[in-house]
Image (cartoon, rainbow, N blue to C red; front, side, top):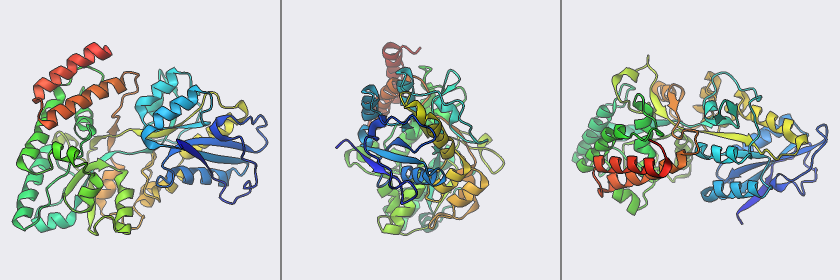
Length: 433
């Protein structure tokens, strides 16, 4: 089955409501004062608890509103949701899994204007859902990329931990030093692991290079970032891209089983690592979080704001929702963005879009989370720039840049030649110059 419905009544006041006919957003609920059922798109609900948590918490506050989750295949999520919306049977609330697809829904007239949904001050990622000044979704989580490190491997190698002042040059030197000293100590662990995604190079380069623009068609700024990765591979300080892809290595496995001392990855990995250590799927070791290394020292240190990247995850409203349910749907969006919801998400290790002091305190109160000041700083303090600009051209550009990424790191093309080819393709195939 491509999807199924999960009711989230949680034994509360409306558990006896008739739920038949509510899937796919086709229920006619014209009485705003009566019981309302909203459907919400999600994926992998059994292992992605945020949907259930938000639905139940909102229902507890609003017992006349029940939220049902439509559970889609995560690998086909955007395709399936797009098909359901086109067929007029999409859920009432559409989770925006990837920002680059927002314009697909918006240009298709499938998302409601939600500019009037009030958001708390300081929430991250809201601008990613705006098209020509109109908001078509609101964020509820905002993952950012940070640096995870294994303190036990650092101690074994006698290398100083990241301290928040690292540039990428410092990271490169540490990865090579860790690899050498761990080998001298009889360990096969490498200094770092870089996953095969294009994000692991291009996301940082675009965020940290002044004036860089993914939609500009000019990609010379990628060169130094790729040259650094190639140097680390050549030195044996991280697994080669070809090994990562051919052996289908996972970042969870490489870091969780102590095959690498450092891992650049998104904050979503916090919850995963805690869970895997508790279940035994990951080794039991101490670890910490540091700001991602910076292009230069101007954005390092406790008095500066490190620059990283990450896209939000948000909720939009189906433009074809029954008018009697619009207010309830907007109330749900406002709740999902609130400090109360953010605190609840933080308590299960999800990084919410709102990071107030109480939310961060809840985030690090999770059993197994690191307790040092630098980890707190890294999660709470950063300028997070989007990986995916809100544009109908983003997906096509990223597909071309993914080909460039593979060509460079697999060794099938040198850096300059691959960048030149990508620039030509973007100009010819996407119309960006």
